[in-house]
Length: 262
Image 1 (cartoon, rainbow, N blue to C red):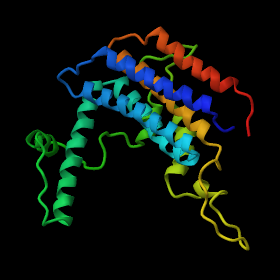
Image 2 (image 1 turned 90 degrees about the vertical axis):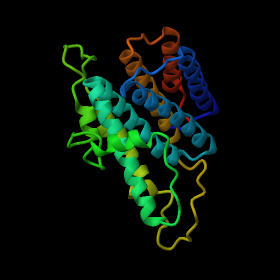
Image 3 (image 1 turned 180 degrees about the vertical axis):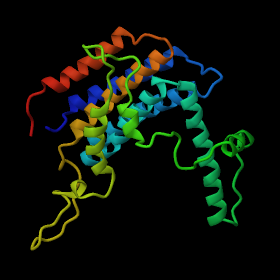
Image 4 (image 1 turned 30 degrees about the vertical axis):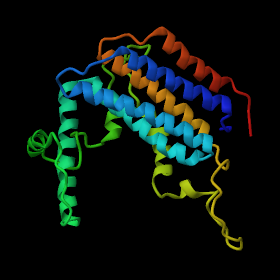
């Protein structure tokens, strides 16, 4: 894919600013359950990640932006799973895992830094109670296939033209898998720009401007935010506003209509 222009980067950056302004203007106050803080927290994180991806792309760190974009896809599929069915139950598990993980980190801190006092959280009693009731410190769900199951689960709301439920298998099988190579230490993440061929002099990769993945990272990241918005608004029984939807579609059109660039 071609490299992003300043117009592309500015469009995504402005879109996130407008999204922030819209959400902050709602003055949402989470209800007394685990679900509201969890889904809103994930939505907030997806917006900040997209803003970070814009910064990386502006710097020329396109591969690094592409790797970070995998987290955008993970949040997209996690919000989908949480809001698709049994939302409160699933968010309770999510929160329980957080509590368990927090207490496990406290154990590790005391193990490796025995001479340093660990400041106790203000909500430590509540966290410890949740952690004691939570079994596994390794996952917050019972899906054997993990994120793949989040993507494959039949959608409770969206339907295909023939009436069959949609899923997001594509998001897992293509962008998530593709971006994973740029998260992990695998050959596709270093070849060809980091690889020195036999007989050539080794040089550290200059980084900026050497990759073509920045545009793809921008596209997938802001589209993930759009999907997250749609699902979170639906969870709150609110309508995705027409003016904001039009802004997202305008940026999609910009990316689709751009001329080929080197």
